[in-house]
Image 1 (tube, rainbow, N blue to C red):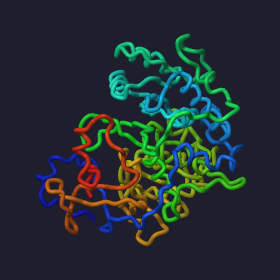
Image 2 (image 1 turned 90 degrees about the horizontal axis):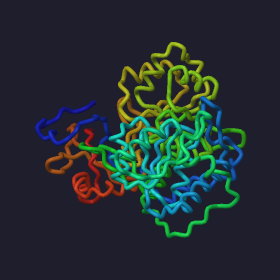
Image 3 (image 1 turned 120 degrees about the vertical axis):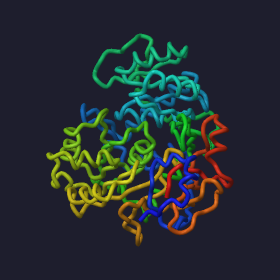
Length: 445
């Protein structure tokens, strides 16, 4: 049960986007050792276990790649970027919907040592140019359908940046000036050889977030941020989402959250690849497609937000029988209301675990997960327990002091998954970080 706000005037500086129920136990269960790995090393370390299994498949076109093909093509992208003159810490933009090629481009860029800034394909020209200018982008990946939009945006912003196009609808190359993805992603016969020094604290992704308020800002996420969050999710107490592929067994998870969003990128795409999962992609989700995903693709895990939960509830064609293979539903982005949670439990049946999570772009993204493996690890309306090596406090924003029992305050977080900082924005960094690298969330708890 939430407490009342003691002094409403003090919340004028907070966005108060979301209110969450937190336990008074605000330290994680244990501290764990984070592997000293680069993200691509972590993702590919078990490649030999499932090299011939399907890694990604498009629900609309059935276009698919095995894990070996995904690895080879990402090496080819890394080689292309290197030969194209991209150097460490240059930035490429990925403006793609959820398609099977997304992880190829992302991991290829990571292997090449360049930074990725993901963009929503539905962005306006103004939003596109603002992000490309802020990150000093040197190359853009988009679909053939978006080529003209990107080209016009670049010209308007006086940006002369090459464009790589991915053909998703068997269309001709949109322009002789564009670079065909299929040409540069030809299967590589050897691993990409890095000739530059890397560090686990190098920035590899710059997604944008409004943070606690104001204009969207670039969030610098490092190898260590991603590796930490993936490793935290994989400890036994919280490892409920996906099972590692074993023999003929392979979890199937549709990528419902967009991969240009941190949840779709880390929680679904990267964790799915880490576990040898089959990831089902689709550019745009519809109610009919949702039925198809549940019925024909034998989905075993769903990662959703409350609007998708409501779509499941509202669709009369979706019956309990559609959930017979599903073992876990993870929900994040906003709290599920008690009525919505109760209705969802009724629809899917008692054998399906429904777990809520909490996080933000600045935390790579997860800091809390509900878990059945720990006593009191699941509470209706709550967000679960802190991940290992993660700390949280609830403070009074004016003084920075911790609140007392049953008082509302601002949630602040600390852990290895917390961002390096906002990209080239020292003022925003000073506002969002407290002494000791505590991150202000703008959320109330």
